[in-house]
Image (cartoon, rainbow, N blue to C red):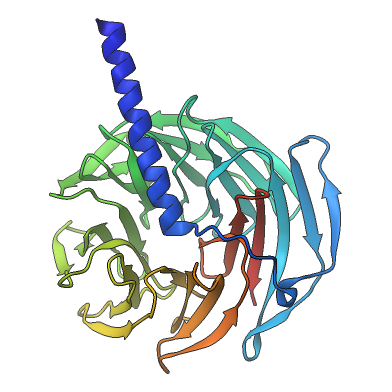
Length: 363
């Protein structure tokens, strides 16, 4: 009976993981099959890493294309990985790219030395669904099912596994670090938000929601954090008090993000696809960009605080919107990959068809 109960529990956990993986793919990754646009092609040399036969890195020469008038972007690297990728993230200094795989592993690549530097098994059976570095890139969190796996990081060197943390009863949906480098905030399918200190092994604070909490983000400028559970709530980190609850009639939010200066929040509604921006002074709605189709997903603010990026699967393009002029300032058309962004300096594209990751730097 005990073994049967355990099998049922594992089956339920797998189903929840698959459900969240599908949601994450729809949130971050939009699959298309169009050929690449000539506008984003670049001359490459190819380096095959002997120690990592499943990895091929194309090193792109300094090909720069206009993006914001005097600003440019360039493709930094292209990586091919044979395993199915479930998520990926960049370190804050953009030196390391970490990928989470469906087989429960994480793989870390050094984009400066162009080699794989670490490979770790987080979970034997379930995919890695979210990854997050702390602010100085000294710690990486990798989440798979209920496991929050902690790694210590050093530029150019293999990561070391520190410990696993189990503080949630269901799948961890999102995680973010606070300004305190050893403290993270996690949210889960169990409807709980928890703040945990890694050094002290102590849960500092927890809070529950009536809905599943799908996202959490931290604002380093004013030490606040937001959670997303259909609506968006902003909290004061010092006393954990609710500052503002953002709700729009006939709209549901799944994810949100702060801009790099911490002055604005951007999100899009699942039902309408409309992109909305709020200020971080009194959290008033200051901008709405109405889209003709609901398949447009905002990715993040770019390094330019009044501009943000979204991906549209209908037109297979990435668009850059200037919220001060209410217009699209640049389109990158015929994007064949799934698209995602993890800091204001770079954005990543990933194609499930050929399992290639491309890293672009915003100049």
